[in-house]
Image (cartoon, rainbow, N blue to C red; front, side, top):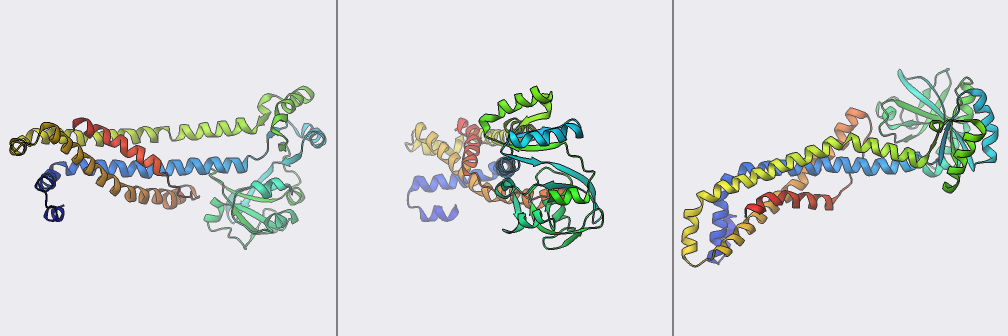
Length: 359
């Protein structure tokens, strides 16, 4: 700013820059509070928005079946298995058992050899032949949490419960799951764990067929509505839980930003009364009150712009730490960093309101 004073040849501009520099010590605390608030809002907001966008995309991939049905007992499940192929496009059993692998308790799922998994399942690591190896019974997928624990790396063999071995052929994302999971072929699951519970199924069909299918199940089998969940309802429930989880975060962001904005407003208000003797000579030289007010507004905009620009890299650095380091250490899975510049601009405009009112 001092260099700009020397470069400028206009007297009013030099006075404006010198006067702004003189105000900085009095505004420094408020500007630092605004910088921290903007950085925290950008960082936490980027984390939440990245999580939200990633989570929605992940749900679209994981919840590919249009309907999910849970039988009440094995006899009913056996009857349903005979009935499903005549009323659906594809039947995807969701069968699982539990066991210990490399000293860690995990859930082991079996999946059918179906295009649904090849087209939709979210893989972090895998090759074209991944699903063929799963279907053959020789390969296994592990979730990100289990992979990051260091106990199941791609290409390594893991000893499954029962003493048989499978080779890790890929890693899949599994956000929100606090325990390790392993996916093997459905035939391998039934072969090695014949007592596995066979009650849950995902079913593929056209979306317009879902309502009639639900009604048919309730009529023919007497299944309660709670045992028949459609994809849309399941996604809606998951999204609602996500929004509730981060509702407090949004409120805290608004609060910190409001406090910082009003801190700057109060600082400017206090300095205004102290600056009257400094403004009197300029006013006496012919500068109108309206021009002085415009200069005050310009000063506020300039200080806001510098603070806002400085807050962006700090906020993004915070977001990266939250997503790539803290999230991995706390939960065992990493989220991608997605940029939302329009959100930052809206945030900056909101932060500008309180000091602008004073100007």
